[in-house]
Length: 344
Image (cartoon, rainbow, N blue to C red):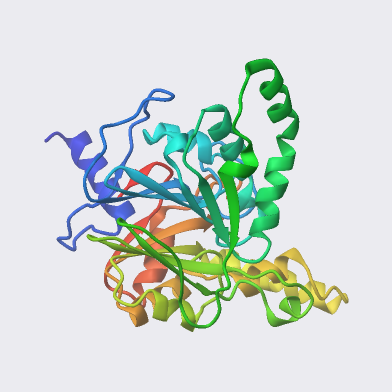
């Protein structure tokens, strides 16, 4: 192995938080597949990170929040932010094979590609139903998505002789998740449960019916928990108990401190509800992630929905070590900084 190979391997090991720990590298970045190409269906369970950027910001390096759990070749989606469709194709997955989508909440960086997915499943001649699961408002979101592409549906029905109506193919399922885990869905491959997390403060929930949830996906070979967007949550800790993978949102500690100060200034100026206060109070720092992971005794932490991620500014992304080191203050298991296309 030459010096260049050693440096490349060392950087990759550092990114995974494995350097000097003797742990196997579980992650690999997926090579880009030709558009529409499908890989042979693998056996077992694979986690694919489709979009790892935190917040509603579009950039060219990271897509918005989206993940796929692929079990014996069958994909299940968790969140569907902007860029999900292209990421699915790059991962070698067919859009028409997606039958279940689980939304953690209805912020646009988690839902923007839902209408695009359903629309392209319809034009792709999908025959089996697709159900979109999520908290209150998900049924209405699916109805709105169908209304969004009604013109396309009507035109193609007349002009192309299509006979399947989207209303018969797509449905939304409002999940009544609370303090205790509830079953969302199960089939022969997966069991999906959900709890309400702590993304929305009580002052907001008192004025709206919308909620935010975390999911646990149990398969015959793996257990994977998706935090969704959330402040530190004891309910999430219980959901993640002994999980193989804990896919958790993460905000850099220094970034969080800056936003906390901005929120304080906004409050002093009489602005009770601000973007800065929302982000500072309803998201988890990398230290928070470490604490939750240690309490839950998970095996591997996967950091995703990263803030600042690729919106770090002119200096580029933070080094992976900036995220990893803060988690390591509380958690001594494996830590992986997520990248779009990463397969675990």
